[in-house]
Image (cartoon, rainbow, N blue to C red; front, top):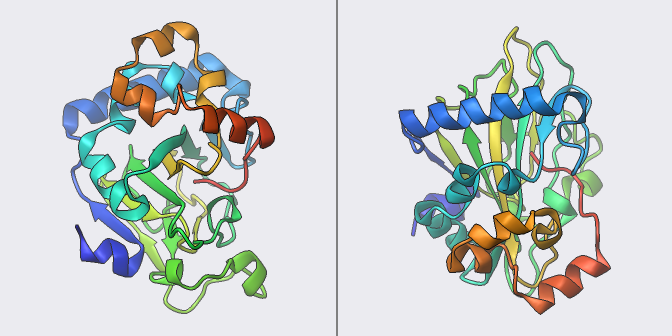
Length: 253
């Protein structure tokens, strides 16, 4: 257990990916952006000022291996407990010289409930996150506030007392309690800023992207038993939840 994750709501793990995995992830993400062009991310949503990729579980085993990495799941369990599942697996690239500055928010608008935390986001840096290229901003400790900044703050796009920028070198992983007040900042540089986002939720919450429906059967057939459980492929409750809430877009880095 890491006390900083509980106290601050996030944990930075430098050099998590390793150089070879980082190279492979960058290469595959760039290939997908080239292949998908203007429709990139359309399975989820398009975003002005940023390019997205969605449904990465269907686009390379290296992405599924990353989302099911035991070291990542160790920290996700610290936030959510053992009853968790993958909610979505996406990429986001902050465009150069964009004005895409997001308001502080909590993911999917969710707050902790009587069962505890329900959402956890893992940000995997494919490029350096710097103060100028669209790094994540967050207000440490606000995951315990029980408040949604969109409803609480007069202007959640403005800087807030105690706000910090989450920066790091390419290959860094950030484990984030997604009830933490956070948002993406504008990329003021001439280079894109890429990241992968593995988003997890408690098993009693609907997936942001219904994996069983999105994944090709060939992909499902290749899943390990552990991955089938993580993606809730054989979970009747997940089927019911996803049928009731077919599109859980909302803000997600």
